[in-house]
Length: 150
Image 1 (tube, one colour):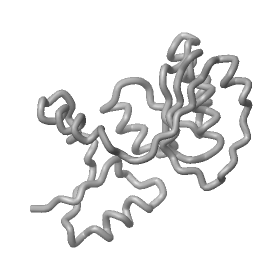
Image 2 (cartoon, one colour; image 1 turned 180 degrees about the horizontal axis):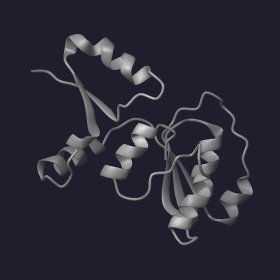
Image 3 (tube, helix red, strand yellow; image 1 turned 180 degrees about the vertical axis):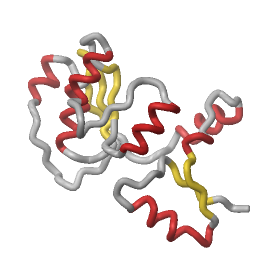
């Protein structure tokens, strides 16, 4: 799910599932339609906005899990906690990385995943500022940016 057309187009060509333009359609309805009304097993809130947290929770099947990855500027989020109880939703926080790097490296070594298509922009170390400028530009075309050391 995104609002950036370039990322949605990239997702359409390179990922499984369905890209959802959350500005053009209701993501919760789209997810429930795609899953025949069941909802997702897991959702990740990676933006840090109250609306995306509510969407992540409402898109789940009963007993599903929402993982909070995004950092929220607002410390309080208004939402219906009864939805969590009635549908037995698990809300999990996630901070930092401590065990997944080895798993990721193993997947890459065994060629079980290919991340090359996701790296849409490459910069040399002396171009780091350009890389950050690209990432900070609204509507940019970047999916993942890599700094390449030769």
